[in-house]
Structures are given as structure tokens and as C-alpha cells.
Image (cartoon, rainbow, N blue to C red; front, side, top):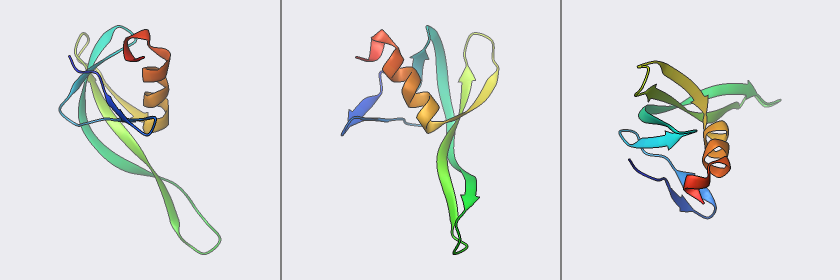
Length: 79
């Protein structure tokens, strides 16, 4: 099981890696971006998101990068 590497205070999350989140092993299946809005000039705004595979229950979850990073920060395993 891997621990995420950090660069300038932000985690580097890699597809294919397995991370322990809240005591449960989760494998990062893929990373993509999610459209979150459009500004006044018509520019599309996106944010990184991840699909995780819970290795205990075989359920997949969709999670925003900010939410995932906060789980790493909250976990004592990643300090």
C-alpha cells in the first residue's frame, strides 16, 4: 500500500496506486476532469476527479481531488 507523495503541500495521486483511506484500501482506477461551470467569457472550468475501487467491498466511488486530499490530511497515516 502506498502513501501519496506531496509536492508543495499537495498530494500527488497516481492511477494504479492503492492508498489507505479511512482505514480501507482503495485503488485509484482513473483520473479525469469534471466540468464545474462556465465563466462570463464562455470559458469552461474543470476540476480533477478520481474513480476509486474499494478493495474490501469492490464498490467504486467518484471523488473530487479536494475531497480526496482532505481525507489524506485527516488521516494520521499521511502526516
